[in-house]
Each structure stands twice: as C-alpha cells, then as structure tokens.
Length: 357
Image (tube, rainbow, N blue to C red; front, side):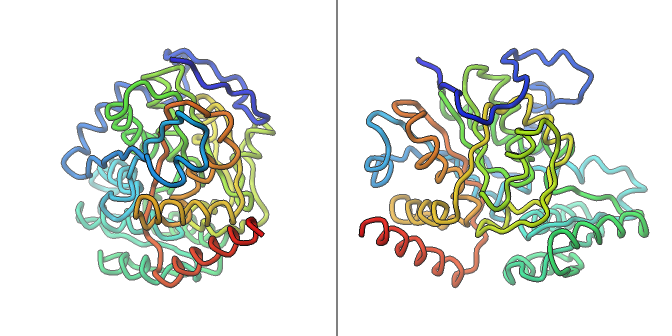
C-alpha cells in the first residue's frame, strides 16, 4: 500500500520515522501505552469505528478514498478526556488524594476530571470560563465538583495555578504531561487494532494532548502511517509552534470550536507532537460548521464543533493529498447545547447556499 505524502508547508521539525525513541525525554512508549490501556480497560469504553460510505464521503472526496471514523464521542462523559483524567488521578499518592485536584477547562476536561475524581473519592475544583456550556457546568456539579467561573480561558488558567499554590491541590492538566498523553494514546492503540493498514490518521488539536497521545501510538505501531493535526484558524497555537520550533502563546483565541481554544502550547505536548506528527493544517469556522452538518446528515452524529475539526481537515486542506488513501478521522466529543448546535447547523446551511450561489 502506498504511503501518504507529507509535502505541505508546516511539518514537524526533525521528525524521524523510527519506532525507537532513543532519548531521555519521556515520550510515551508503546509498552507503557499498552499498560495504560490494560489499566483503564474496566473504566473506559472501547469506542467503535464506522466506515463512512455515504453522502459527503462520496461527493466531496476523490474516488477510492476510504474513510473510517473513530467514534470517541461515545465515550463516557461524551469525550476522549476521561482517559487522561483517569490516568492522572490513578497516579496520585495518598497525600495528594487528601488535598484533592483542580482542573481548568472549557468544559469537557472539567467534566471528565469531576467524574474521575468522584470515582476515586477525591475532592475536585474546576475552573471554567463564564461562557462555558450550562450543560457542562451542570454535569461537573452533579459529579460533586466545585465549579468556579472566570472571564476567559487566560484568567481561568491563572486562577487554576493560584489554587494549586494556595491549596496544594494537584493540577490535572487538560492537555499536557506524560500521564495525559498515555491516556489519550489508548485511543490510537484501539484504532490501530480496529482498522489495519491505515495510510493516515487525522486528529483535532486544541492544546495537543489528544494528538500527541494518538500520534505516539500510531507511529510506533505503523511508522509509515501519516498523522495530521487540525486546528481552527482562531486557535492555532500548535501550528505556530511547529513554524517557530518552540511552544507558542496566543494573545487571543476565537473559534466556534471552544473546546480547542487553548491559549498556548506547552512543552511536553509540543515536543511529542513535534516528534510524531507529520503536519498541522488549519480550518475556518465555516469549514467546521459544514463538517458538523456532514456528520449529522450522513452519519447521524451530533458532533460538537471540536469533534468536526478533523473531518473539516479531510474535506478541506487534506482532500487532495489523501486521495485514494485509507484514512481514519477522530471524532472526539459530543457535548454541545441543543440551541447552539442548531445555530451552527444553520450557519453551515447558509454557508453552503452562499457557495452554491
């Protein structure tokens, strides 16, 4: 089977295809990924894959392009985030458990940490922006977390760090660190067991924790399988980090994909992505909304904006490059307010009508 070309403009600097890490940096090893999967097997769902053979998969893609959706939106709490949260909390020692944990999130990670903390009997505080989904806030409170609202994500992260310093709680980070990456890597491990001989895997990127984990699993199992990260134009910290060669910060973030609006990349996730991800591409909010519509009409999935970003990448900047390839697309979450979802589907229809005119 032929391999995917990776001749786009924003490659990972210094990518090496070898499965041997040969470094002191704590990249997720395949052995540790497998151990993590075994540890989490009784607490998370083994989410299914779906071969997309209708509608947009036929109309928008080149002939013989084979698309598989990894349906992580069916995970407990509605997103992949539970895997990393469980792995982080399970590693706490007795003293840390007594002090409790804190999480900062647009909502999905907060829900996962609240749920994981409840299972472990650990006190939990979560800091969310005031514009966070009421449904996500309610879910956190129902699982026993104390919810604190801040003006925006920058201020939420600052408050979370103050709570760590003042209360000695452990920060369960939404996208950075070895334990988080090992948790998210189990998605990639499952996928590679479910669909063989993949040419490419497409992953949404916010802070990069999901992409780092999945890419580390995919590349160590199948070095010639390309891994593409996809970011919104309005929240493209990892794209900029790949350009500069160091973790970058954004002065502002703005995208319909609120779950991907990380204000900065951090060193661990950046370095793992830099090592294992072939390229980062970007998509517009209109492309994201159109992909949500495609997933709804063709596959009957209620995908939140962040969960449609990888699909938007497939139908947009990666379409020609992946022509005739066997491709897996990560659909990562489904926590979206019904009214907001209808609004964004309406935006997709309006956008499509304008294109037709």
